[in-house]
Image (cartoon, one colour):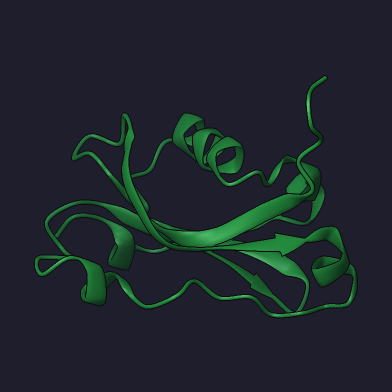
Amino acid sequence: MRQKIRSSFVGLLWFDERYTDIIDAKGVIAFSVRDAIMKQTVLPKGSHGEYKSKRFTTPRARVELNAGIVTLSIGEGCPEYMIEEVIKYFGLGRYRSKLKIVRASFWDKK
């Protein structure tokens, strides 16, 4: 019998240079539906700089739960299909209707 996954995750992630794959994730922390309903804030553990000495050499993103809203901060160059991959990777499908996507060049490769 397949176990039902009850948690979703926040975290920091990195893509390959062409946004075709998620190559790493760090600072990952689980959150529950209850956390979202109770408008909790759950942030990834640490920052990109703590995990990679050259944090601007690959595109990256951040998933957070802010006051009950799932926020994905991602680069302007990231294609829609990779946003879908992030949603799957972090178990965010149930939050799709309340998912806030914030695009900024800050998250693209420098």
